[in-house]
Amino acid sequence: MPARRREKSQPTTDLAERIHSILGLKDLTLYQASQQSERLYGRSSPYFLPHNLYFDLRGGTFSPSIYQFLALSRITGYRLPDWMRLFGADLENIARLQTSLPSRRTILLDSSLADPYAWVPWFRNRIGDSPAPPIAPLGLLLERSGPKRLSSLSESNGRGFLYAKIGYQDALAFPDLFPGSIVRVNPEIPDKLAFLANGTSSRIFLIEHSKGLFCCRLRAIGDSVIVPASTRVSYAEVELRRPQDVRLLGVVDLELRPLLMTKEPEVPKDMGKQWKPRPLSREGKIGPLLRSARVKMHLSLREASGRSGKIADLLGDDTYFISPSSLCDYELLNTAPRHFQKAITLCSLYGLRFQTFLKTIGIVPEEAGSQPMPDHFVSRVLRVETADPGSMLAGERFLEQILERCEEVPFFLRESIGALSGLEDLSLSDFFWVGGKYDVLHPYLTNGLVALVNRRRKRPFYFTSKPLWQQPLYVLLRRDGTYLCACCGLENGTLVVHPYSQQFHRPEQLRYHHDVEVVGQVILVARKVG
Image 1 (cartoon, helix red, strand yellow):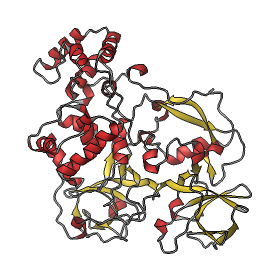
Image 2 (image 1 turned 45 degrees about the horizontal axis):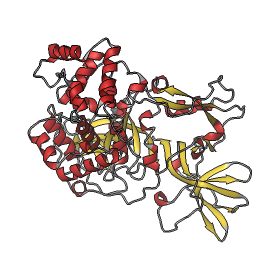
Image 3 (image 1 turned 180 degrees about the vertical axis):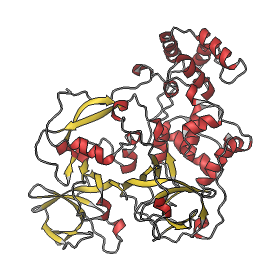
Image 4 (image 1 turned 90 degrees about the vertical axis):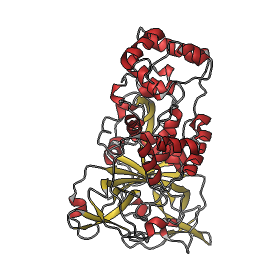
């Protein structure tokens, strides 16, 4: 599943009793909470909490608005996402939906919504004194340890990285980056990377202009004009002035590439011909913000509504659906949706940060509480078996090395790997460390870190008429116990390895099922870029 299905909230006694218990932890009654909301915001305000809230909830037809959630969070001190989750709305679904749904244009992923108090499975080094081999299944190097709070693992995740999913009409950096890939962007870059480059920059940038977000190399003209450069696909070369027409969001430094999506990249008509840049603007009201975001995603009102229907189907709740007329009203009448489910849908469709959405509709997120609710109230359950933590294992400290290479772990994607790969119930044995070999036999493995392997796909295919980016990639196990990752195919019972390396390698011929076995096909690769 690309997103966690909405738990069927109990519209009668259970939900009302939960709220009563949560207020009781703060020595509050519903009447006192209602009085506080009146003092803070006024009785006619959308933030006001009715004193008959329990009765309305038991009727099964009422759910708080976004504003009332903020009031509950501020009054009790408990986190706003926890209050929303109590009513069945998981904010982490925004990034999951952004990751799984197809998108024409590149979309920013909201990585800030990962629940820092969630429990996640964690790992430790296996005992051993020998260094990690160049290629090996992670199950040989790591083993599961006790689960940990995400907050205890993300102390180094404060570098401000951005994450984006490349749309299938964003092929400016093809084939170095692939439509459908998820990229990490480092915003801490000096302008000289773009403006002092000799010709076209060697690094790939994430930029924003009036047509949307795009990943590309840049060609500088003078000190303030840049041209997005494409080497393989016929995009129009348009001069963009900084900062009026274009914004440099950062430089791409990591890619998570699915390898099963091998369609030809698409050049949209409006980008293939010369077009006139429009100045960038920051929208301060909800209507213009939604319209600008929808246009940049190249969606009509009807298309956006259709995709909201898919979100409603995935989450099992029709409240996430937004009709074309409602989308039009939000834009023209400058009104915000009342239901929190529709706010999640809008952020998922348009790539809006949830914090930005709140500020645009007049909510100050800083006023919300910061304390986590007790786990049992918000179903923050432990989904993994707790192992004996024991002591730190000896060895080459492989886990610490790979974490240092990664710099930051995108924990917000932890439940999106299934949607990206098409596989469920993954284990450590499905993931392979590929970062120890530098003379790689395929360019996708250059600066590689981890590959995900479908171990059911064991019959290798090599297509002589297809380009490199459409050739399947396989992990092989030699008779001596070492692993190899390359393109290969069967020829008269012999497995032929086809190297695509910067250095010369002869095609290797191995006896199938005697000298070598096929472990499986690589379907996802995480690699450093630049």
